[in-house]
Every structure is written in C-alpha cells, then in structure tokens.
Length: 116
Length: 115
Image 1 (cartoon, each protein chain N blue to C red):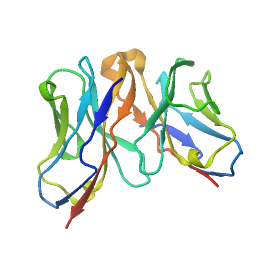
Image 2 (image 1 turned 60 degrees about the vertical axis):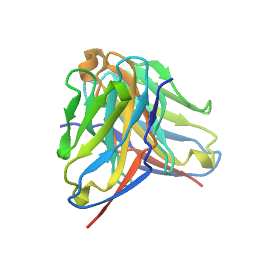
Image 3 (image 1 turned 135 degrees about the vertical axis):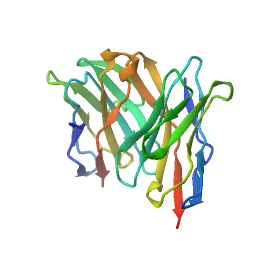
C-alpha cells in the first residue's frame, strides 16, 4: 500500500540558509499535517492544509511558510534557519472529508534537518 | 486547550513481563485518543485509536488500551513484552472535528526491555 513520502530524508544546512521540505500524501487523502520533533521532544503541530487551503496553524515560526498544491503534495519552506530548527519534521495525511471514521493520520518517515 | 500527560518518562521491564503505560488527557468532550510507537530515528506508527464505542480497544503487536472517562485516562497495556517492543511510546489526543484532527502529543515514555 502507498505511504506518505517525504523528501529529502536528511538535510544539512548552514545558519541563515533556506530549506524546502516536501510531502506527498497517500493518494485520495485530502489533508496534510506538519509536525516538528526536536531532539528528545514530542512532536509539535506546525500547520495543516485541507483541500489546498490552510486549515489550522500551530506553533510555526513566521520564518516558515507552507502550501499545498493542486496535486495535494505540500511543501514546508523554512528561511533564515537557526540552530534551534534542527529537528525531525514529520508530514502526515488523512482523508478528513470521510468523517471521524477516517481520522487516522498516516505519518511519513520524516525529514531530519540539521542546521550547522 | 487540550493536553496530554504521560507521567512516566522512562520504564524498564523484563522480557515476558506485563506492561502498562499511563496516559491522562484533558478535554471537555469525548476525545479522539491514539497511541503511537517510535523506534529510534524512525517515524511514528499507530498502535491503536479510540473515538467511540467499546472502551477497550485492541491494537497491533498485541497491545490494547482502555478508555476511562471518569479518570480521563487511556492507558496502554500488553500482557507479555518482547525485546522488540523497546521504543518510545506517545499518547496523543486529536483536536478537531469529524475527520480533521491535529494531534496533541504527550511527552512520551521510553520503554527499555531487559532480556
């Protein structure tokens, strides 16, 4: 079965650089969620998109932006990177329009971002 | 705002022993509750979920959890732990409506298994 795909899997950047993380949801899933997991921390919700529109926003810095495209893939853009942005970034998807029975989120393997 | 508390940061059990990981949540209505497992450097795998019906839910890998509204708890259990169960376990509550639910995670419980 198809799973959530994230690319790249690993990314190393310098401070003040920019990074773009990509997420390809499971086919027919209409909602994408982004989470950030710092070292030894629990995942924290950043932002979500439903049918290509931003549906919710969490603790996402202003330096970050995201969007969902017509093919439902999503990109998280991160600018002016800081050391504290080093984390595992997860993307998850589900079929929100299906109702509560379909609320299971399927997680991708994550992108490990290291900022030097 | 909803919150999830996992009181035990680290638990060590012997292989073959029983296991219970605690989870308490705060939420006004009936919550959507989840348990995820994460191996080091890996993604999150759903073990089980609860959103209505029978309060005892069965999951994968022999895990089960019981929803107790009176105690605001959703504890994860396994009767006999295997060495491969060593991992980080996260309890989460879904905040949203219908099929949309952003997840609020607890701090996690790291499980170590002694041979």
